[in-house]
Structures are given as structure tokens and as C-alpha cells.
Length: 421
Ligand code: KE4
Image 1 (cartoon, protein in one colour):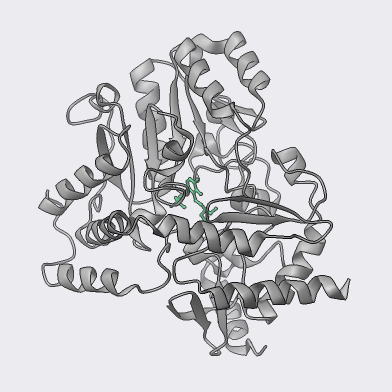
Image 2: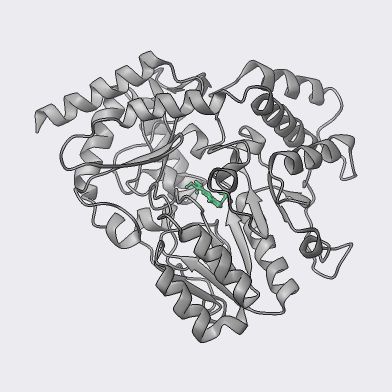
């Protein structure tokens, strides 16, 4: 596949942008080679600057549940552009979106819009500390919650991809407020609470992990987190930036029937525009300024373009509940019958092919995957016109734009790889 223009652009980009990218995982560091520079997207496909087309299973890391450029979204953006781009003042659409988020995710009694998942988790943590008067946070190894100083401890996603256990630049004092435990181990959480429960403000968890690759919770695990946080007076924060509106209209909390105290959302809300949110119990959220003493702010929070996109996305999801059954069916077909040596984890339309024969239930088992073999698979698929996440430790996504023909083409490309041995 001729990717000469991407190669030229990548060389040029590296002169002005660290690593040539605006987010590390895009640099293909763990799989090598040159990342295709994307010219445009349409439906299930993206097209690079050399005109090569790819079936896209990254979908901007999750937001594009309806694929690229769905007509209803473009129409909503055209309409709002006629009114302006930003006011820094309250707008009716923000009220409508807040009400719609509350309707979709009933555990959210009050919600604040922000611009990224990182802002959402950073703010949720601050609110949990302010509400409880405690400093410590429990997170889980391999989970990623954005580049929040105190959460860049044994994080997943780009940090796992690059093999950075803990990033430099975070003062030891910040990192020391985070207790990183193995995911899916109830005993580890029980011990942490037994030893320091009166100092723990919150447990933050990806209810279905996407950032070490897709790893579902063991049966009873989320229930245990819910009861332990209640028992010790800590808040349970579901980071649903990736799973929100992806696994069900009400996210993982609807699918698993757990009511967290706070939830963070992002990605799908904006359909590709920068918007995220945090919210939950009214008694907790009432501590947020200007109502309460915990400060959080943002020039572009509730931006009219991003909010219009959010309203269009959530209204379309609400009006088409069969979307989830379609996504389930197509993704199940994609992930059916993995060859020997491959463990497939899938929840709804989130999936990961782990290059290991053993079950993948936490970071320790995920990191035993054969990343060298994954690298070969990744490039084989890319050359077959299939764009997977450029890391063993990321989740793939299916959209409603992915046709049965796309799924068949993907399966046949993968079978070609494994036939080679
Ligand atoms: P952002 O700040 O990147 O919008 O969101 C951070 C975040 C928070 N919580 C979860 C569960 C997330 O998955 C993310 C971001 N996800 C990664 C992909 N695994 C973003 C991709 C990237 O870093 O470029």
C-alpha cells in the first residue's frame, strides 16, 4: 500500500509536534511504521492522504457509534453554526442536554459539561475529595482515566502501549494519593479499605475496561465495589467515558445494574466533537461552584457546537434503541471462532483480540500477550484495508455503519493472516 504522503507528512509533523502527533497512541510507537494521515471519513471507512481506504474499528477511540459523518449529525451542526460558535454564557441547548443525559443515565441527578474525559475524571475526583474530606483514591492497574496527574499511576491506554509505568512530571506527593490495585480482585479492595478506609475518598473504575484492551468485570465484582464504598463512606465513580452510551443507552451501569455515586461520560456524547461530562448524586454535585465550594470551570464548557452534536447523538440513540442489538450481533460475528492462541474479550460492541491463550482478566494477564505477534497482525490487517487500534492494549469498536460485508471482509483478512502460520 502506497503511504508516501503520510510518510512525508509524518516527517514534517515531527519537526513541530512532539512525536508528530497530538496524542501519543496515534504515533504507532508500539506497532512501528508510519501512521496513515487521514484525509476524510465516511460511514465505516476512513481514507488516508494517498487515497487508501480502511474499515475503521478505532472510530476516533469510541465516539463514532454511528460511523463517520452521519447525516443527522451534519444537519445538527449546520443548524447550530448559523447561530454562532461560542458565547461563554448559558444556552437553552445546555439545559436540554443536561436533561437528556439525566434521562439516559438516571443515577445522574445533576451534571456538569466539560471538554474532555480527562477534565471529567479530574473534576469528579476533586468533588469526591471535597465531599468526603478525604484525600486518597483507589484506581486499578491498566485502567486509564485521562492524563490527570494523580491518576497517571499504572495507567492503561497510551501509557501501557508505551510501557510507561508512571509518568515523570507528577510530584510523588500526588502519586502517593493514589492506591493502584489489580482489577477484578475483590480481596485487594477489601484489604485497602481495611487498612486505610477512613482516608479513601473514592474508587474510580472503568466498569468494563477498555484501556488495557477490553476486560469485563468478573461476576459480582462491581457489586463488591458498590458495597465496600458504601460500607466505608467512599464514593464509587464509574468512568464511563468509553462505555457510556456504548454498552447501553444508560451505559455499563444500566447493563450491570449498579448505581454509582458519580459518573464520567465523554466520547459518544460529542459524536467526535470535544465534550464530556461528570455528574451524579445531587447532594454530591451541589458542592460544585457556584452552588458549593468546590471549584471547576471552563471557557468552552457547554460549547454550542459540541452540545448540538450531543443532543443529536443522544436523541438518535433514544429514537433507535435497536441500535444496541444490531451492534451486539455484528460484533459477536466479528469475534466468533478465534483461532488457537487468541483470546477474544468482548462486551457489546467493544472488543479486543489478545495474542495469548490464557484468559485476560486483569493487567498482569493482559501484558503477557505477545505484542510482537500483535504488531505483525496489525500491519497485515492495515495492508488489507482494516484499521485496528495500533496497540494490543486498546479496545476496538463497531458502529452501525459497519455492514455485514465489512465484517466478512475483516474476518477473511484475519483468516488470511492465521493461515500463513
Ligand atoms: P480524553 O481526555 O482523552 O478525552 O478522555 C480520557 C479518558 C477517560 N476515561 C476513559 C475510560 C478513556 O478511555 C479515556 C480516553 N481514552 C483513550 C483511548 N483508550 C483516548 C485515546 C488517546 O489518548 O488518544
